[in-house]
Structures are given as C-alpha cells and as structure tokens.
Image 1 (cartoon, rainbow, N blue to C red):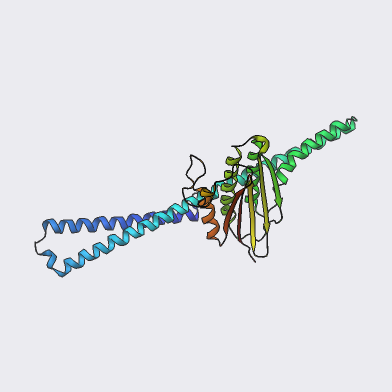
Image 2: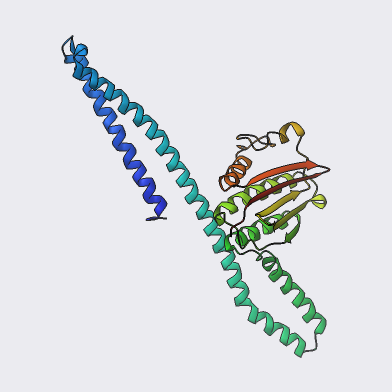
Length: 288
C-alpha cells in the first residue's frame, strides 16, 4: 500500500505528533532550567508567568492533539487493513473465475467425446458435476459489487466445508448501495463469521445459514440467520456493546464494529433470537 492516500495521511499525522512532542519537551526543559538556575523572584516577573502559562497551554494542546492524531492514525490503519482484506477476496474470486474459464473448453471436449462414444449417461453425470462447480460460484455473483460477491463466495465455501446448509435469497443487486463496498464487507464478514461459530456448536444435520439481500424504497437491506444456540435475553440486550461476547473467549468487538459502521452511514442493525433461530437485520440508506 506504499504511496497511498491513507499512508501519506498517517505519515503527516506522525510528523505532526513528533513536532508537538518536541516542543513540549523543549519547553519543559526551559522551565526546569529557569527553576533551578533562575533568580528566586523569577515567578514574580510577568514574562515568567507568561512563559509558564504558555507552556501549560502548549502541553495541554499537545496532549489533546496527540490523542486525536493517534486515534485518526489508528482508524486509517484499520481502514487500510480492511481494504487489503477486500482486495484479497476479490483476487481469490478472480482466480476461481479464471480457472473455470480455462477448464471450460476441456469440459466441452470431454462431454463431446463421451457423446460421440454413445456414453450418454456418463456425459450427463459429467455435466451435472461441472454444473455444480460453476453454480457454486455463480449463485453469489448477484450484486453490483465485486467485493461483496467475492466475500460471499468465500464465506459460503467455508460454510459448506463445515457441513452447513446455505440458503441464499437475492431480491436486489444493490445497485444503489452508497456505503463503500469494503465497509459493507466488514459488516457482512463479522456477521457471517459469528454465524459460522454459532453453527459449529450444534450437530451437522441441524446447521443452516440463511442470507438475504434486498431493498425497499429508501434502504438497502440484509439479514443473516443461523440455527445455532439461542442468545440468552440478558446477553441479547447488550449484544452490540464493546467487549460483549456470547463465547467464553474472544474480544467481543465484532458486533460493536458492525453497529458503529452501519450507523456511520446512517444505517442500523437489529437482532432477534428465539425458536432456535438467531437473525441479524441491517440496513443503510439507498443512493439516488
């Protein structure tokens, strides 16, 4: 990511913080020298009072700026990390699509040979196997965002490896999604990862994951449901608080990040958990 806008902003913030800290150190040294070697009556002198007040203001302002810049730098670094993850997801999906395109001609040649030899049943079985591989990718290529498509393809593949039955419903292609794709990927990734963790606690035959993308007149919407353990009411009430987790380990920041990210773009998220189904529903305003 060298040379990117975010990296330059981080460098500027770092340089500014170092400058302010240097001024604080210099001013503190000057005051210390005056206290040690100055005249006993130095405090009564107006310029010394002014210097002391100025030093206090600089130190206080510097501390406030330090805190602000550190927080901004941290946020920028997190954004770069999130975007890097999204780029990696897209690259993986691109590799999968290129491999399918490369193999397609070979598949056609095999089917043609089988039919030429009169092996129609074998040709039909071969086509079904190939179709299954292609449909596994194409069924998530339903939105206008390649990043979202890539994320869904990877998460669904991970779910099926765990023996989870996945149900997808696309009622919208999210053409008017105003939220940056990498931010939406962060939201969906946290929710899907939580669902996969929850489903890992129940027998394989009961594992079901449902994802729905839709929209109404004013919002783009989504829901993620799983048939894992029901969240107790006392925890459900505080589920979006920082540090809150239904598991014994972990940091409990995923759902907090989901809520704050959606709220940053004017959206929100809600949760219900009853009758062996936990559902998270989220929305963001739709663009013109």
